[in-house]
Image 1 (cartoon, one colour):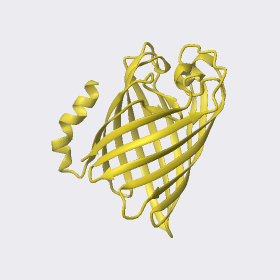
Image 2 (cartoon, one colour):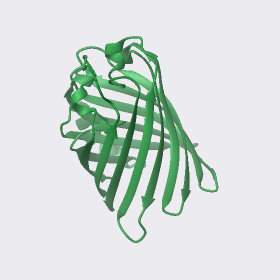
Image 3 (cartoon, helix red, strand yellow):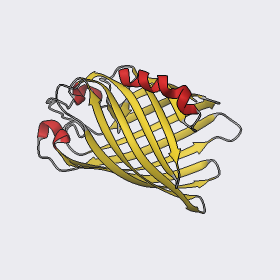
Length: 239
């Protein structure tokens, strides 16, 4: 978690340049329905800098708690460059490129992916579709495509926001043991349903996630113990 501490130490100086930042802790770091922290509490810190022409640079460090999925890594740093553009009528388009870098892994397991998305907002409601694609890389044993849809509704005159999502992960397999990192048991569907309570900079969240993953042999990197239904909680403070 040295990188997280470095980010925190840099916050006062960077804040003067329009930086956004947050720190948080979750009962389990789950992405696309599967755990990235071996089912344990996971701290995280992130910073975001807006640059001209609608571009954003983001860095997030998350504890992975020695998760076998990522070769026993202690943490992952997600470095993202992205853009978003409002094209009128509540419609927004976005694109991004992300590198995932794992600290303390038993072998080199870093990988990259790109993504596009579109969302439509009407009052307190928003719906969107997204796609994320990781080209064929040795660290993930092939390529990986995730396509999903999401919805969000802020309840007027209350601090509550409800959200839901569904996604599908598919891809090719060059190395079964490494492909199990992102698709344990093969192609699968994930879903989530959650609620956030937002009071100024403080956000409290509760989310149920699930998948249709079954019959996982649990080779190295699959970590089949943490691919099923689960309710997790998260608390975050933004600056």
